[in-house]
Length: 258
Ligand code: ZN
Image (cartoon, rainbow, N blue to C red; front, top):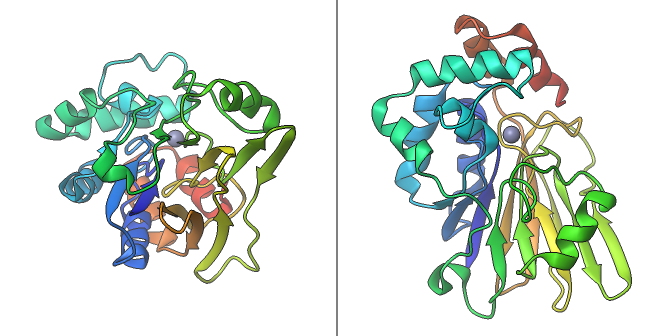
């Protein structure tokens, strides 16, 4: 069983299209780790594409605020402006879908997990608290020790990579790529007996200094996670943000990847 793992699409239509084109034919189920909307200028268009793919999804903090179930009080001004704009744009059906997304961690049903994999969970932020960021080993330490699953896929930081613990050994996973122009992949083994937090990175607003859209494919039988970075039409995504009257900074940061 191969799961396409997407997170933090953030209403970036161009990035989502590039990711789905690149991943075509390489996955059986879709796991969406949240923040499907917010920041970007194409919330309805992105949901028009994602929802029929019929994957599993958890809610992100932007999904909550953009659908009006949490306040924007804790957001920075650009995030708040974009969230209120999104709430105004979303059609009623998409709004309802966002409002009823489950809070992570969720555990895929046996048929969706694949053979041999009994302990996988999906969350937006930490498996212990959906709003907590896992940016470094210090953040990962307690969740790795306390989480109920062997592997938890998380998003929220917009940084591709992961953290792994086996007995007294602790490792940070950070994909290594050669450049910033072409599509590239980086594969990691999911060793039995280790506990792991895996972040596929952000489709629509990467913050790890690589502007390319990020995603991952988990193969439960081969026991691998393959990280991907794929170029997309960033100029068009920027153009849409500016045309929508959203803050300029939200367009700029896409090119910078931060
Ligand atoms: Zn996000």
